[in-house]
Length: 181
Image (cartoon, rainbow, N blue to C red; front, side, top):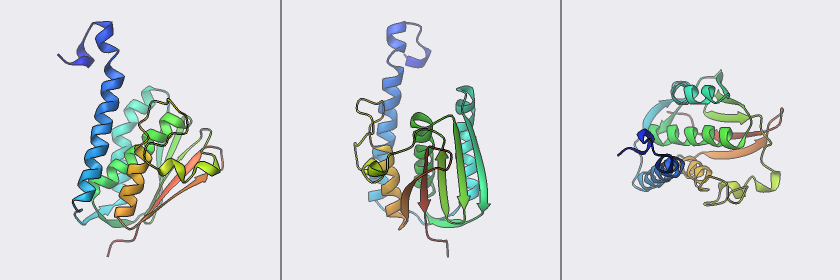
């Protein structure tokens, strides 16, 4: 029986837990794939950003959130397209869950940024939120692996991740990569 199609209230109440377990499983599989080497695909960051946003936009818009892609400068990198896509998805989901109601995905050459208008991440937590199982709010719904997975993907690709305060409040998480040759 599919839980999301169940009519029994008790059974349907398990849906958020099952969803969290599915996400955790995907994150652990992503980490395993990184350990086993990565193909060197040529990745168009504009196309990748638009694809991820197009996949997430219907759910976000239905829940009253706004998301947009801003291209300051197109760019491409080499790496594992699936891993970069999952990292960007994690950043957007994190921004929506812990941020405000507006998310901007910005492409600037070989960097991707996710900006939200939420409460932000305190400066003393910028490095700690990248550690495995660390959560800003104890007992929050996340596993504390999403941002760590993003960091590992970026590290694996020889890139850099930084967190800054957004001009309108909220946070900006920037992923910087090396240009494709």
